[in-house]
Length: 351
View (cartoon, one colour):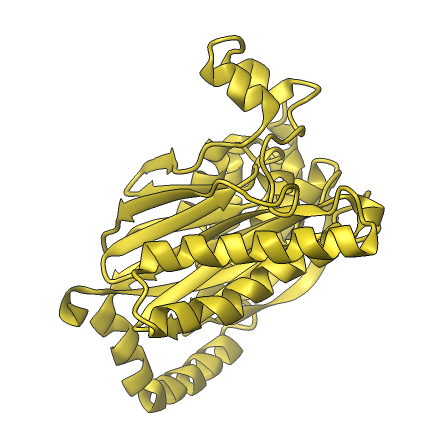
């Protein structure tokens, strides 16, 4: 029933990193795929020269085009999402065979929000997490060799994270003519946050830190920037992608659209306020670097009330974890010089 439904708003970010030449990751954000449902996904292409970038593109485009038609035809949401995955698998496998692209494949983790239910479809080692209040829970199980060994008791969870063969997958889209798709039906509540991440992100940023960044960031877009920035700061060895989906009562999304004219006035008023505060400063974050900012560490309707004075050469990763949350929120100072003094003090906290 629509009155009991949820409004889902997702934002995402994908970056190549500092080592790879090509970004084989793809993200998908679709507000309405039919019948009031929303769709979000991350995909991590495999194969390098075997065109992993094409495989990941094919799966997100198949989801984008096939799922609306399946839903419009009356297919139940979970069945429709699983069928769209299977069609993507068949298309990728057929293309790889025809073009001689052995090894062309991709992971994919997708969330379909329908009413109060979140349906996750999953193949590979990208992940979905559910943040509820202060808790975080991984919804998906990695389809990897070491994760399978851990499920059998041969490896501990700690050994999985550092094992040399942790990137060897047991399941991927396009690797075989048919594929088993994990489908997870997760009841959702207003205030929940679902996070989709490729392995380049979740291997560099631990689960607890993902939760901390999202809960302490002013908005989801800022959080995606910080998370990808942290992955880059820790070497950027792989493409890194993240999608953050916030769930709210359906009427909040509708109210936001109806109040758009009022929102414009609010933006103008906020702009005036920011102009008057051009002598206020704070120490904050831009990408994966610490920055000296003017204005206020806040946003109105997604627009920042601040500007950049200087992006320092100090990565966020160099700041002690105990101070990082304060930094993400913005540490107020009386001047740009005082902001740099605060930064020196933060660096002195390092062990």
